[in-house]
Length: 230
Image 1 (cartoon, helix red, strand yellow):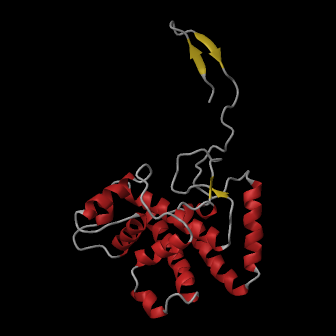
Image 2: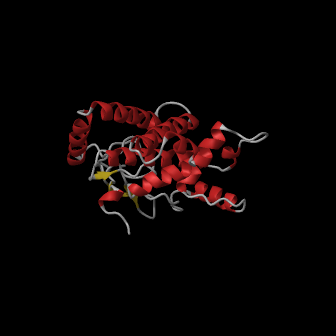
Image 3: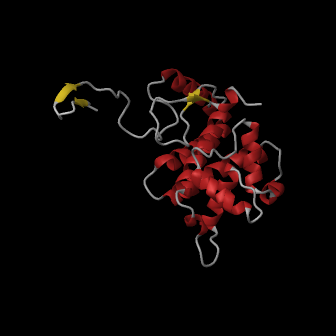
């Protein structure tokens, strides 16, 4: 924070007594918006107020936001955050697929969880792939499972990990065999959940990539549906 330049003999040649870092001294993963980006927050609040004028929509959106906030960084274990975050995902999937009339209750219950989430993400132009630069543990999981005949993308890794936490196989806890997997799945899960909530209210501005922990707090990117990749 206060750099000092030393000469070859160890003597101090120069000093800079001024703050070079102006962003808050904390992790950037707490919220999806940069606190000093007033335009982004203003847009979201206007959309949120509009959405809350519909009583039915308000109740669903409120619950999804509560689950997302709790999963974002609530005190407790990663396992708890993953389970709460996945509950938010399931709430959104039911709204998007059943309440919209795309699936019946019966067909929804029978459908594969990963396929349901992949379809909803695709409709929102949210990528479901694995980013090897950010998700080395998920890459390791996908590589190991490919040898068993499974093809996991990011969604598949989230669903697999959640299922292994809820329904562990006898004699072993598979989710713990991949170092760093729970952290990456938690980050990816909250990334999906927050983006789906923002998409549901038609937000078009920038957000923090919640898959990333070590980044300047002011680093934001456009939501993927604002400039979808072809």
